[in-house]
Structures are given as C-alpha cells and as structure tokens.
Image (tube, rainbow, N blue to C red; front, side):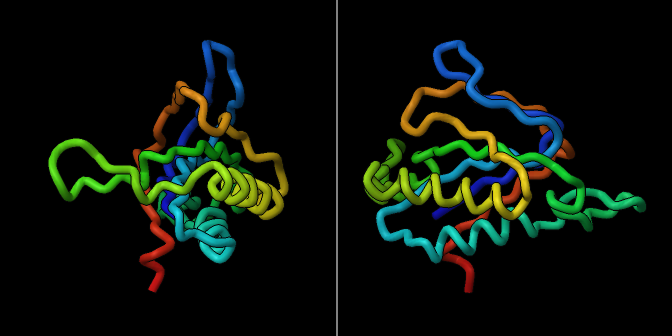
Amino acid sequence: MRVVIQRVKNASVAVDGELVSSIGAGLLVLVGVEKEDTEADVDYLVGKTVGLRIFNDENGVMNRSVTDVDGEVLAVSQFTLTASTRKGNRPSYIRAAGHELAVPLYEDYCEKVSRAIGKKVGRGIFGADMAVSLLNDGPVTIIIDSRLKE
C-alpha cells in the first residue's frame, strides 16, 4: 500500500463538475492499494499519516502532526500509485488491487484516520474520474510505501 501525503492549505475533489469533498488546512492523501495489501498495511499507514510531524511549531520547525494542529484530511483513492515503470514507457498496473480488496482497505484507512483525528475524513469516489484541487503548503510532500517499513 502506498500513500502520497501533501501538506495543504486547502484541497477538494470533484466528480463531473460537482464538489464531492473539501477540506481546509491539513493533509491531502492519495491512497494506492496493491494486491498483497492487508489490514496491517492500513494500520501502519494510518499511524504514519496521523503521526507525521510535518506542520510547523511556534519556531517554524516541522514538529507537529495533523492532530497537533487540529488539521483536516482528504483521502483520495489512486490506483496509479501502484504503477510499475521498469519496462518501456507505458506504466503497468498489474500490482493494483481489484475493487473487492481495494475498496474495503481504502474505506478502512479512511475510517481509522477519522477516529484518530477525531473528525470526518473527506473522500473522493472510488473508481471515479476525479478532479483534485489543492493549494500546497510548503510544499511538503511525503511518499510512504508500507512494504518499505523495515
């Protein structure tokens, strides 16, 4: 499972021109689920997402988490994070989980982050063609792969 975490001043997602979800300051998280992923991968990434100290403290040092700053989270499913680009120029998505695994793990991730931060997590629509807008803060962008935790 892979996530791309971006510190944002605000972010939103729309489908067919209709706003689906939006947040103020916090984290935009792109979530990619692979065939081999389990609830253990979800738990690891939830802990990293809510615990990352990437918000500035009173001294301008990145020393606070999204919970410390009472930030919001918008999580958007993105199967393209599973792309393999080893051969040629056309990415392969063979490692991407199908809906029967990816949807429950994505939903589990969103629910667990929501419980951890004490507020609703904004979401995209799984499998939809989404337009994601954001105003990066920093910019600060962190990529985490649950397979690389050791």
